[in-house]
Length: 499
Image (cartoon, rainbow, N blue to C red; front, top):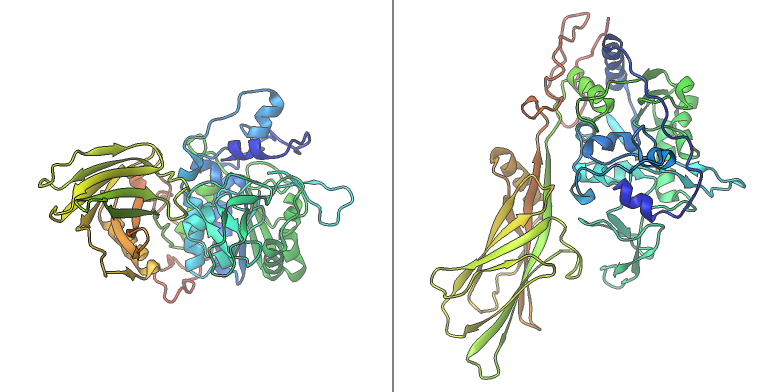
């Protein structure tokens, strides 16, 4: 992502400090600091987490300022790194999912995502480069509620209506940055305004819609946990400091030194994981989750698409000319980034040739005798590289009648049922119908499908560092390990006492 984003940015020569030295706490000291952080989180009343690009490097997304960051290598005249997978296929890391669980357990009250260098025009006569790195949309994708998240520098997958304020999350990367108009319009009845991207360019000011709640929650915070950010440039880097006036504490987890280190009550330099992109933040956070007896939930990605079956009688009324389109729910012209190809076949009773659709738009056109008996269209959806599920299958019954079976089910309930099904069935590719509607001109039946395209479980079986992988005995003064039980989203009642 950062590669494509860097190319879209306006040119600027000074991008701030890059390629800074990394520091590593010795293992025993690191464990001691993890224990201290766990206690601070458990005792906190208003925890705010402040994240930077560093927490997304383990997702295969290169950063900007690290030793192998984009701007570091550019300054050194070296070849740029290659992302390990397409940006739209990046999946949340253990850290992202641990934050989701901390929110559900009642610990995390607000999350601030900030990151890349941009110029701030918030009243500065001499604007300074402003950090701008986490625009990957992984916090929202992981399950953090939108109302508990400030994305200070935008989201590469989000469009916003400048007229009514509605936000649209896409499954493809928005083609522009700099708060420019995109090719789509607001779908709200009576609005129809041209949408804009939400990602800032160098000269764009931090949006009040994101900055104001971030500032308010930092003032309320008794703990601000900074993860994977260099905290270099104003105004975003000063947000954690707003907790100090009310007696709050700052914790910084970063491999490099930051200008705010002296303000921190706890400073953690973690160890690099075996994965070339996997930094210490996951080790620290998974250690904290062990102490709190919280399980890191799996990430289950569900994508949506629509099938459109359109029919019309021939002039002599002997045949039905029909077409099948597999399209994005964001519009027929929008890309379907998770689909590589679609294999289309028909009921054995039909003497119709199978087809493979491998170029978007995915469209099949056929002619059938009007007296043909009802039949099924079977589709095998082959997913793009980066989807851990390889394929899914969908069957559409065809009888050339306009069905009165029109419905729109509760989307949230369907998605939750799909997630639960995906956890019990490792084969992946589960599907469910969310909506079915009819269009009279031209005669069309539109079905919206939800499909599981990726499942990532964070446990020892796949080499991740959660749910027991930090295998050591966390002893309390009273010898009690905190209970895993919790109710109504409240914090576990057991208190961890560290020696």
